[in-house]
Length: 211
Image 1: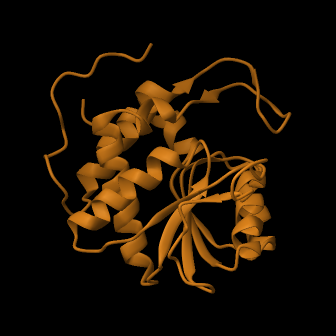
Image 2: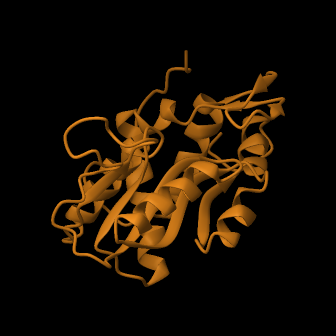
């Protein structure tokens, strides 16, 4: 159970991301998502801490902050894309938050999700929501936590097989465990909102954030 947060540090409605947005988002991730305990990750690696970013990405204030910060990072890249998506389930709320923020800035960008495996019925596709996106279109990938990079590498492969061009990835937290290097080898540049070490410092009271 995450701690209750009184008040809201985020103004209503879409706005440009500021240093305050990033600081407030870091505080939420550190307070709500970080747990110091032994855990075996989906990669099979053992870790002494756990990050459950869905506690923030599925929260109204957290989702709003994620949308503003990620959209600001995308705008800073200077690369226009035709669609934004990512591997389900981690990317799902991030994609929606991003699309709504983009719309508030007058940019209508469709979204899509990448299944771990193709459906056994219907379209039998791994990609959901890409109808209308032209072949060869440049797309942006999102993910909540980057560990080994496997899920994003596999999503990028599926996107390329579907005829699109993934040009960049943005992640909420990079656990600094080789994922960035794996994505580089796969030809997918990546930027993170936070590194795990920054989240740990904030959780321990040694990082930035309002007192």
